[in-house]
Amino acid sequence: MLAKKIYGGLPMFKLLVVEDDQALNRAVCTFLNQSGYETSGCVNASDAYDTLYSGTFDLIVSDIMMPGIDGFEFAQTVRELDENIPILFMTARDDFASKQRGYRVGIDDYMVKPIDLDELFLRIGALLRRAKIASSHRLEIGRLVLDADERIVCLDGEDIPLTHREFNILYKLLSYPKKAFTRTQLMDEFWDVDTSTAPRAVDVYMTKLRDKLSACEDFEILTVRGLGYKAVLK
Image (cartoon, rainbow, N blue to C red):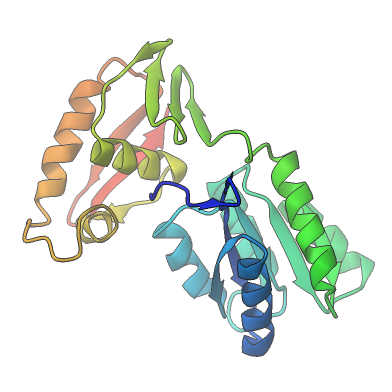
């Protein structure tokens, strides 16, 4: 996870736009980028899953009618992984049943196409404020607190010293509990592109994290045989 960029003295929040109409996807991403956000665009849910697993995002804008996995299934899966990230549907479906289903699977807002980009900008700002993302990036796992802005890990109020890379790996695992990450995925994100370090170096970091967090009984880092690692909440 990268430190937040600064735009006009404020953090630059990362948004994910999932829209199969490539022209609309580009238009929305370009507008939001020009408005001070850092935006990534995907044209289907499968690509969006990969993008979410490879980075940290603050808000998702998604279509409903997409090839393969539709927006309802996508939003429901995201919500199972992250209870807090705001999700805004941007769709041509204007019927009450679709809106009702969207809110039932956990979305936070619903806009009907054609989209007014200025209104989209206002709604995104409101959702970010409502989620209190502007003030803090925190994970609270029982007695353990991770503050991504301050890069602090506390257990029962006591600081646990972690290196920059240890913090990043831990925050990633706990952001997606039960999701298994391969050693290669973790190295691609948290090591330099031209590193000569072998993927087994990840094992060393997992051993260090388990040792430093041995007093925390609220989660466990499990080895997924033949794959990598995942965090499981207790």
